[in-house]
Image (cartoon, rainbow, N blue to C red):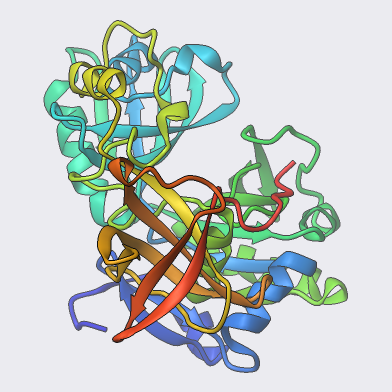
Length: 367
């Protein structure tokens, strides 16, 4: 934790709940809470409901005539595939195909797109868009203006319904709402693999909304959940984390996020490099690894096939659901490894046998 880190508008609530903090993307954010810790919070989301403060996520508002077309010429996915009121996972790439960030785009209409990038990359995404914006299109970074609360788990609908908030809209869509005078947006999105919602709330209304969610969730056994559980949950789903599975050195083709690229679009940042790489085949691909015995892999550990180093772990953890070590790893395609192959990971000088699998490790329930 650094003295220069930014704080969520809910910081005092986290302190009162006994949170242990960690620096993440330039923000002091709760890692876990007293009274259970990561495994209890993870289990609450898989079996009941948890509430995360993810206000460190960025917010960038793009407005003006032709704003949606402009964004579509920059980011990888095709906004033409969705209608207003829908959200879309997309990527901001550089000319060489490296990933500046992965983000969610909320399409309001032809003249407005609201973007939620990752915390550490928000300023750079906003800078690149602002530099490219045509006359009449404005790009405004609103990082500190909004809080984001994620209500995730099979009982999440019950919590929101108890507060009279909308719950029936489809996955990857959003709806405007009001909670006791606080205007907010209820999004059917999340990063856990469970049915859930993300609420974009004015910063000055965050405490009131947090308190209401926690109170409404008491009958469902709600738990506040920190970034520790958020990471184990997303790893079980095989969801990428920028700086691990995606980066300026890891392309969408390598990370298996080519589904978020509008390959038929005539224009987006990095198109030429990515199309060429796709045609040639990437030199490495992202796979899942599941331990066959004891041992917990961690990021940057080396993966071996016999005596040959064939890849690197990008994320690794103990899976509270599977009760075993799991990892995401970039493996050399030249090694010819496929699903079911057995490899070894060097875990602090000890070789741990792991099976190559296709994520997710746990069946998703987002819909």
